[in-house]
Length: 195
Image (cartoon, rainbow, N blue to C red; front, side, top):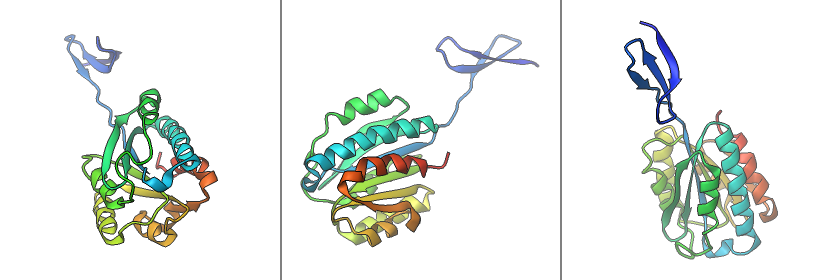
């Protein structure tokens, strides 16, 4: 039986059989979660760099075929934007963020535990400037890696470079940059995503 590739009435890709029945073609898109530290130490231009870098990152990730999601962490973690291929939606949710929204200290484990709640997550890109309790964060990162989730880390200021290398899937996926280069480092991180 011949099948014709077409768009269905909802505008989605479908196969139409000779009998007229359509079967929607489902495509899987990998999800990437951008996890940004919004603790008190991220105030000022550093946070503005992170927000601009997040938009650049999302645009690059979407261009590579990913759906981009956004979460923040401080004392606790919160989802900001579910995975989307729409950078405008991602950007509009990002603009509402402020430092201290989920607490003033840095609990990296809370963010990684939130990431672990995604049923399918190809990668987590973590952005932080502070120190955290290491053991719970290492355990949460280990669970993500065991599921096949890649972890890329970007640290600035007081972030511990060696600790971030342990959190990342491999040491070369952890970088430490000056606060003024945070935006460009976040954009560079999109190049590390597997296409």
